[in-house]
Length: 340
Ligand code: G3P
Ligand code: MG
Image (cartoon, protein in one colour):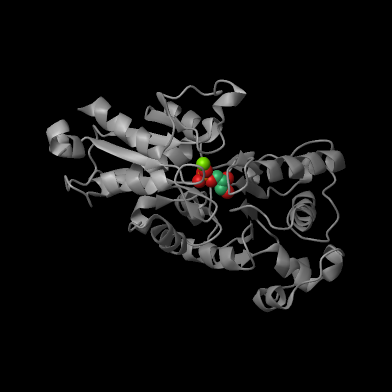
């Protein structure tokens, strides 16, 4: 049966509707694309019997590599072309604030080796360090990790006793929580210089900014149960910092569900979908606390799927979606029916 016969207003639809897809738990589980995802994107990509494209972008709290690298990986996994201009990951939004730190020494945490150093430099940071650089400078900073040959090769030579770190950005999930929490405490308690004595009082503290890019306490990867995310790392850091100093450290939170990330996404979507101000946006997500909360607050329609973090057997979601669907294909078909 022709899709157009069932959806005669499809051309009008294509100019008034757009989708925002979460990735982990909606389109993929770890390295594996969900079958429903390929069918859903085919419906929107126009590579099918009715041949009409409906714009969509991907919005993830994931990251750890450049946007181009992740888009190439996703295009391979999903069997459709995902372009960088339709892709937003946890730290992409940092591009909108990098001007404040272009000439400031910053610490960028997360990801493997020095991959995120190059990503941060691509955003415009000019003095980017990571915790492996610190360990290469002085192994006694954290005596329980011996740098691998690969880590030693990728480390940037620096004397951190002379570098006042001005900001710490947690781009993606740290791989060595202990090393990263140790270095964060050294930097934040001393006002930026590792090895300097902790500042004596709040007023003498030199303000070192702390920015987290993904608040997810948990996320859905390949394993049956949700895994700890960057939000869990933040809780661990704050618990240690409070045990040391009696207080937690003030920070900026980016990523879903924050308003800054959703406003940034609307700009990206507007550019990608042709800037139609009356665009009806449908977000499809698996995490009520990030995807649904953020979409609802942004005034978008939200569809919660059962293929990720949210498990309907655990009771109703903390943030009520516009609609619940079994998977992303059913979510897309439901949304199309609402607009016609
Ligand atoms: O690290 C990624 C995870 O926190 C969530 O990813 O795609 O479900 O927003 P996503
Ligand atoms: Mg998800």
